Length: 92
Image (cartoon, rainbow, N blue to C red; front, side, top):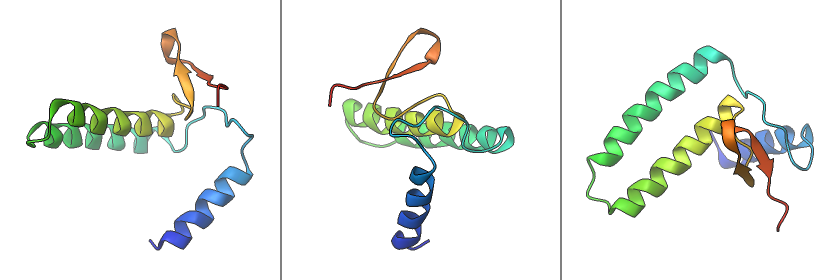
């Protein structure tokens, strides 16, 4: 997919969101299941690399946040509360 196509899709998505989009599932549960399976494979591949531990942690956490975003369990710029609910960080 060309980068301009990705930008168009992102623009359309953001046009339909508030300034702070709510956490809602971005796809159906079957796709989330497949994505979670792929995340486990990705994390295994990261562990097999020669990257430093902090770099591995960063790769893993960013991928996990992306999957959480797809699942509707994460809002970018938010802070984690107990029970995995999100609170928007308005300190910018």
